[in-house]
Length: 154
Image 1 (tube, rainbow, N blue to C red):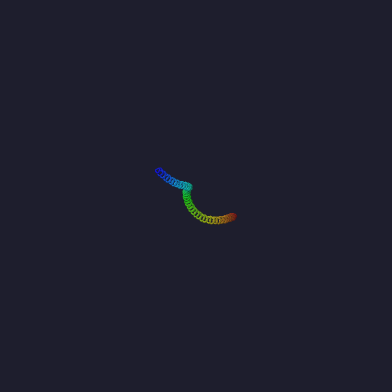
Image 2 (image 1 turned 90 degrees about the vertical axis):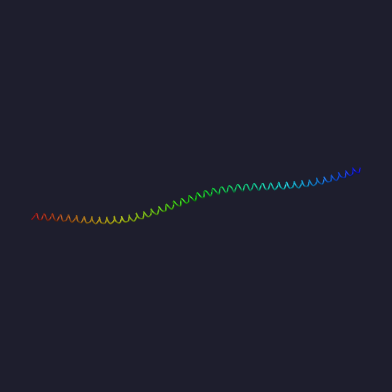
């Protein structure tokens, strides 16, 4: 019986030991479950943050693409602007040359107008002289006829 008591005490001690192990394991399991819950929550938060970051990356990539397109468009507009400025300079140069030619033409036209006026004035003088000479000629011819008639009458 003593032996049974010793065995019962040993068994009771083992049961107690095993119950303590079970409690320790249950506590460890509870701690692990809490850690799992905490990690699951952290994982959910990190996944949400990851999604936000992915969305941000997509937006930034789109903005970068748009920026590249705007840069390319800007370069095209700058080249176009440069060409237009060159064309404007060429047109300005042509305009200055044309204005200079027009000024020279105006000067020549003024010179020729003065020449025409001088020639018209000279022509008018010659016409006046011609009319005077024509009258004198008629008058002298009449005198000559009168003189011839007088001489013939004598």
